[in-house]
Image (tube, rainbow, N blue to C red; front, side):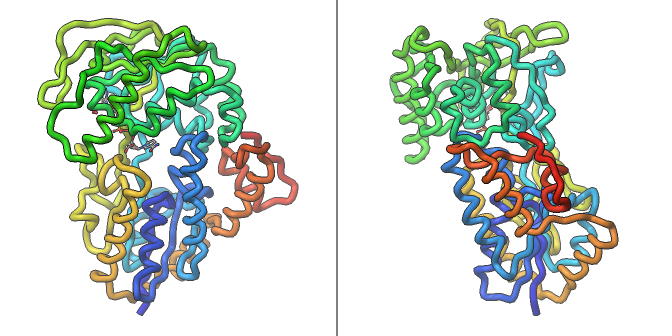
Length: 441
Ligand code: NAP
């Protein structure tokens, strides 16, 4: 008897789970349900627009989606149009692959001022995510402060200082490219509350900051230890050593080398965003690191800046019908098993850490668990489609999504790979009407 599975979320975790289910020696019917018409989740709207090599993985996701056992239902909002309870009633197994779409809040006085943005919103904006395309950040400033020293902070800093030519092979929407290139930004400060060896960025991403056309990385040599020190596992130690080596190379660069600078500033914990209605500065406390934690020293300093972008990690949102651990920001689970027939994979299972490939074992494990736990027998797709019809929900098939992708690709100016549609309406219009106008990205 076929095991009928619904996977909610068509990002990396969802696709790896679908793929793993098709590799089982079992009769499966897999429905991949996504709230946007667009597939690929963070590959499309999270991975930086100038990191197209990373985005190539979506080709293998497309192959998965076209397997006969799998059907894609884009533009279906689980939790709003269809409930999780309804899906659990219809399917033998339901897999939550809904990621971590919101920002960890910067709980700082002044965080409500104009000019303060969370990285989920800011990255979504420059990636043309329909939910964030109207963010319209006010970038009329010479100086931006980015809180955090993870890979997202590096992405944000880099996208803000790259030249138009450096972004030519990116898929940045025109509105974001225009706003960034018009901004008078000369200095971006990245603040780490701990030291350089505690930074979360990876070395490839860090090194790239030393090779930018118009921007030079600046590091205070006094903040760099001679050696990494501490007890780390081999792999972890190597990453930290590489990062320290790169930061040492940056420390001899000169601010006047290029018109723009990205400052890597450590041992600095933000305490208040300053200004009136709009951001005018950031107040920080100097820290020392004690047993791996940042401890305030009581010494404070301020920088003037017109924009603050908080890149301090992401957060999952609760979904009605599933338990939620507010503290950890995940759906509580036992190695992915949530409760009878409900599973979690990716960031909603583990929290927002790791690379794209980290989601692969999650998918494999969930597939194995589903095979072990489920006998099959529920109606699955047939009932789901009836539900969609009864509610007048216009879902998008994978073939339709590929049609939208082909239009985006045809509209691009090479070497940019695509000119993204940035609203759901514009995407759907390509499918539903011959006389449509394309909303420029
Ligand atoms: P992250 O790697 O967890 O980094 C978050 C940063 O914010 C850390 O520096 C952290 O410092 C800091 N932070 C957290 N809370 C803070 C607070 N209250 N005040 C000040 N600083 C605070 O998160 P991310 O950069 O959002 O990345 C998420 C995941 O996506 C990561 O696994 C990342 O590697 C991955 N990613 C990868 C790429 C890539 O491979 N190119 C690109 C983008 C994202 P502490 O360490 O002190 O907590």
